[in-house]
Amino acid sequence: MLENTGVLQEVNRTFFNPLGLNLILKPDLTLDLQKADNDYGIAVHTIDKFKLGAFNAYRMKRHERRQQRLGFIIQTQDFIRGNKFEEEDINLASPESLKLNTLLRCIDNIAYRAKRRLMENSHDKDKDAQSINYRALYHSLEVDIANSNYVDAIAKSAILLFESEIDDKIEKIKKDKEKKDKLFKKEK
Image (spheres, rainbow, N blue to C red):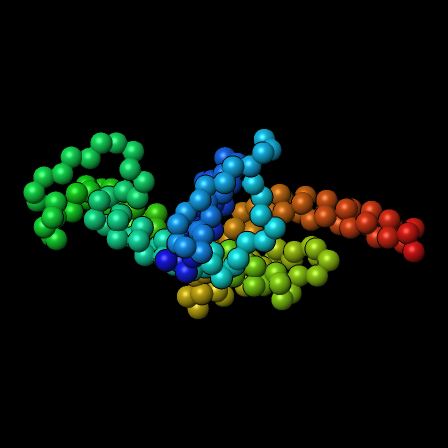
């Protein structure tokens, strides 16, 4: 289960590796904790994207159940349980907390989907860090909203919100590319 759901990779990547530790699942299914000799922790060569996807699906399902049942995902205070806790119809979270957490989960979900959409579009269409036509982007945003394409609309809204920062970054990327191109021409 630790391997199939990607839990081991994520526990190592997000918790143990930065501390200079690495949890290993041995062939006999026992766990071994290794310690790095350096002061910066452990960095792996590759991250298995399939395991990362499996972990995120597993985590989201588990977190949603925990949030609905307890009103939190990560416990930050003592929790006293009575006999009623075992009853299925008891929800320990306040209505305000449940509502806020529902809204936050929606925002997290749409942010993930908007990021994925931006990555797909960038991969297919963006070559050499071309400047963005913000006027065309704004008009296509209106069309997306009219057609209920809210994920695309949110992704485009984020781009429009950070227009000046994006332009600054694109200019820096272009300058860096020019320097690299000159370097490679000199080496040839």
